[in-house]
Length: 141
Image (cartoon, rainbow, N blue to C red; front, top):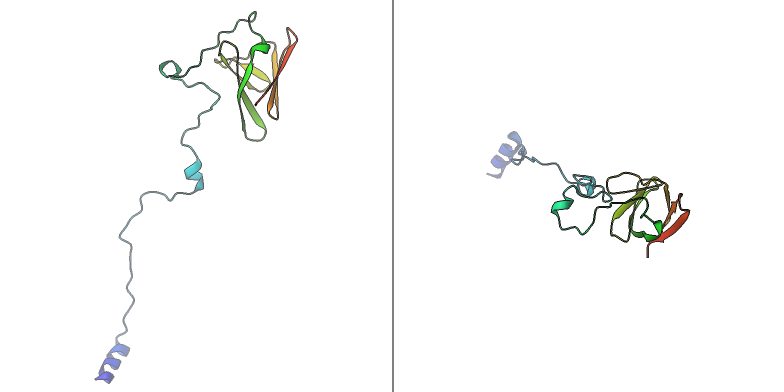
């Protein structure tokens, strides 16, 4: 009897089953770039388009050259991205917000304010008024 089973086992070898997955993956696998890369890129230094409908407490800057003074500015925050590219957010006594980038001071409409030169070094922002010869150094505390 044992010989009969041995002959059958040797003559008819059993093939391994070919197992095919019955699950089809329809989404791509997640990696670090997919998890930490945002779908939309929003510049945090730019005011949102729906500012008038939101609950932000930011006033739109209306600057006249006669009432503007660099002495009234205070540093709100700084942002660094890329290779040494920095921007800063400053605000005046009327709570109007300005952006410092590319050596210029920009109002909320992204227009540079005339006769104002700025530069950012480490954690401080230097703003110079070329017309009135005023200079202020703003530091993050």
